Image 1 (tube, rainbow, N blue to C red):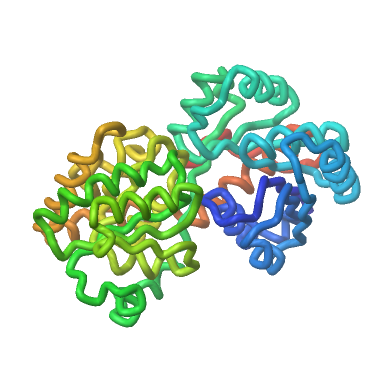
Image 2: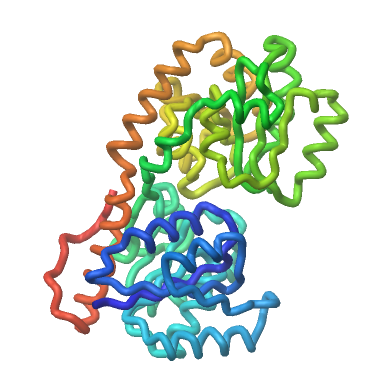
Length: 382
């Protein structure tokens, strides 16, 4: 039995957190014993606690010495064979604590093209890489970014793509009752978008496209699912442009898949990403995706095939043009949705994602000499 301790920043609702929850729920418990440590708690805490022993350390400040002591103590108590950390804050403090606690094998996960990182961030990553077995990226775009910016050798980084549980989508169907609840029962065409309301997600560019869309498609509606620091800015903009009648801000919803099922197209106007779960969800729901032409999205969306790609900047006109085109061509929407669904089922299965991590753990333990496991075939899990 291999004990794996996962360390993640928060248990709030996010792509990395949801993928980790799926991994923990589906990992082979006859071979692996998982435990979770979160630096901070969050809305998903109860769901994690149903699946695994979950410890919230309670990090209070950016630099919290007492938090680090608690983290080291927890790792010494749990004595994992493998420490698997997620994203910069947890990758940093988790690995420092892992070294102090004597954890034999450490794996880091990078989930996004982190353009914010400066020289000191990259220096920290490179120093800690010396004590890290492997970095797991969730997309080829993320892998290539870190190879370019941090010079991670090919042998020390692998790709394990996000997994989609198709069972979750069986109950997500068009529902007149849900449309009534949202106040859009008369809507003929709905554009959906979801995620945290931050600059990264580019939702303001989508909002700027709405007036041009409504000039041609008066009965189009836009649903923004989520919350975040820019919520007030978005509401103010909609009111200023007098488009609030056609825009629904739902706030945080657990039933985002049911909401997306009511939509004709899902917009993902992000400035940068990792492996955007919202794109995977849209494709699983047979919805065309309108995304920005960044490597992290173009790895999933083929322009003109299963969706459309628009420029990253100054793209409101391009977004409006593609929405109007899809509004006027329901057959094109269906065709693109079917192609996206085929892509998902063939390349992004949940079982494939879980098995990718299991093989990585087995390889790490074999390399460490702690267990005599057969050496699996060398990477990448695609």
